Length: 369
Ligand SMILES: [Zn+2]
Image (cartoon, rainbow, N blue to C red; front, side):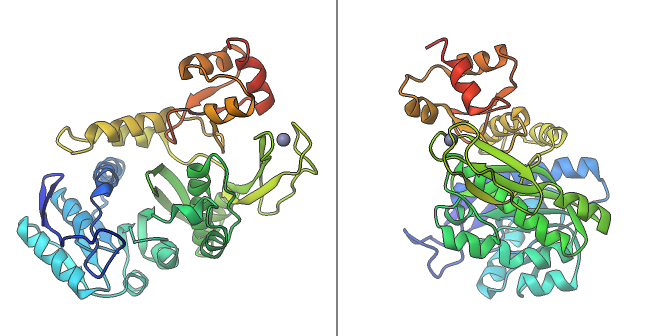
């Protein structure tokens, strides 16, 4: 079938109704992810005009590589499946674009060569490519993880195996996925004396996407590991605490109600995006992109989001407290009026972040009910 996306034309196989099937995979739902990628690459090029080479390491139909080539990048489309690289080559030619296709395992290619920007967008977990990616990426590593159930703790054993961390299935599951993924990537990078700086990270639909600027050196890699730590979560009252460090030291009981807490980690505890980069990316989304409005809305919400390591869901709290939910703007105003920082988040329409504890949230937002 023919697909027109972001100004390029692609031929992609008809996709099976369920599962990946045998045909080269194409996911139309990922158009937002791809539109954001092109915009983020433009924003990155403004930061570093020398950036030039882009490796679409798990290219499948070549859609990411074709779109990057159309935007002026020197592109390599890599896939272990010859059907995929043949299709990617045809899709480059269909758009009169230059670009290299390489039929090899990305892990081999990324150990042999270095690209300014590497994009790991596999079906499922990106972890099998992470070691090679930190060897073969010069500047910016873009990673998608579509295995949100393991990442957020819903498939616990699978999450532990893939990410060498303990995820917990909480009401902030998308953010658990974001912070588990970033922690695993940061700890993998540190093995090669590489530091990661997350420029943009989001959880959308059933995937997590992150853009990591890399720096090299033992000292900066040590400093990156300082961003990793643990979250302590109380399932009874939804209190949570966070503590930096690779060693967990959970409290004997919840600060708020005294019940036992669950420990998640190591997770990434510091900011997951750079607000200047988010603004530059939003300014780089052209009107013609299919998801332009959605992309700009997402980037704006991300830029306004507090950096605190977990978020709350107002409806979940109000249900726990047996009281009606209120309008989000009023709810957040109550928190701010009491001296706390508060913001919406991109994880859902009734989600918010705040510097207030769960006990303080209950008290200060209860007055207007
Ligand atoms: Zn508690």
